[in-house]
Amino acid sequence: MQKIILIGKPNVGKSSLFNKIIKKRLAITSDIAGTTRDTNQAQCEILNKKALLIDSGGLDESNEFFKTVQANTLKRAGSADIILYLVDGKKLPDDEDKAFFYKLKKLKKPMALVINKVDNKKDEERAWEFANFGLKEVFNISVSHNTGFDELYEWLASLLYEPFLRADEEENLEDFLEHFEQNQEGEFEFKNIDENHIKVSIVGRVNVGKSSLLNALVKSERSVVSEVAGTTIDPVNESLEYKGKIIEFVDTAGIRKRGKIQGLEKFALNRTEKLLEQAQIALLVLDLNEGFNELDERIAGLISKHYLGVIIVLNKIDISEYDFDKVVKELKLDRFKFLAFAPIISISAKSGKRVANLLDKILEVFENFTQKIPTSKLNDLVQNATKTHPLPHDKGKLVKIYYAVQYDLAPPKIALVMNRPKALHFSYKRYLQNQIRKNFKLDGVPLILASRKKGEKYEA
Ligand code: GDP
View (cartoon, rainbow, N blue to C red):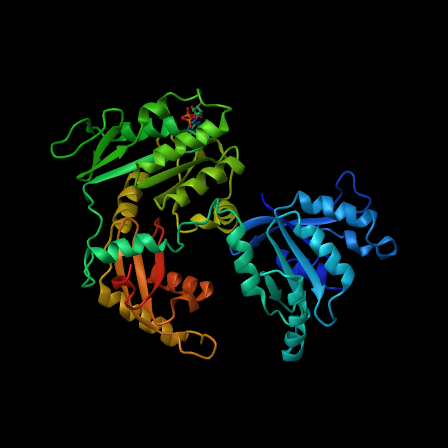
């Protein structure tokens, strides 16, 4: 996990900022070998990205300021990924701060000057005095007034890795333009999908029961198909026919050759990634009996990255004692927040219990994944949503969504064509996403919302 280090003199508001970012009152303290005092550090989440926030604390020992303490802080900053240098905006820049700031600059790490206590216009003006620190990344904040955080968080998030949250995010501009270029009248050519043929990958750690699940699925249907006219099924893949559709499980040979990849986590993840590239729907198999760990999270992160339909399969109900609601909460609110849209099904691959439910769920998620949402319905929804909660103005200017239109499927991709697309705040986007999810069947599928400028389609 990437480390963000907070550096600053006493009384600049370091611990309040620390607590604000980690969203807790009390900082979790831990001893780090080689330091003379406790260092506060805690995991935090910034716009859904995780990081470790470290309060350097170092500069607080003012009696021996700028000697050993400084050296220690410098060392710690050297092992961090992002540096936040906090100063007090009620005061004028301080030479000691500046000197130390230059030393930190030499580390050539992403660094921001964060000016705290900027509570009003006057403070804002004074903050310009800090311009001579010579850094582009300067953020005026007020921890006590809770202002200035959007920009700071956005900057931090832009530097943090994206292991998990990609589903439900905006896709890149090039991809969008490509779709628009296909037909300038706004009629989109959707991805070509064979709606009778579903490609599924079964992924999960070793021993969670992937191969048992495959057996159970294949056994549950008598008509296992190897070849069906008009479809191309890879011979290494196993398939079955269910309610008139072909469900093809990709790279089943690999799943059957289990055991070989044990212990080689990186290889396992690479292989998982290959499976996901070929699939439309991923079954994320988890072992209810053993509980969940970081590897599960990383595999889930890969699914999210590929924008696939997802079903979370909790296996081994026959030998597990569990409270379903509690498990769901753990998964949706904590571990796999980024897959919160995924339905969760508990089964026993061994006894075959509820495996048929899973097949129905696959059909349902596939239908959701490939659906075309009528433009009129979409626009009614957006209109109502913006009436209920008007779009916030952007620097005094009106922000408008002219219309919404789906421009691709599998997964559904929707463009919001606007006058000021950059002014669409992520929390408003999230609100629209939730509204769309509420009104259309999107269980198990990521939803891509792209805010775009009117006429952007004709540029490129
Ligand atoms: P894979 O590595 O994910 O393919 O896991 P396997 O399918 O080989 O299963 C690992 C072990 O878990 C085997 O010993 C299975 O018999 C066992 N197993 C799989 N599913 C279940 C289940 O639903 N209940 C129980 N009790 N054991 C299971």
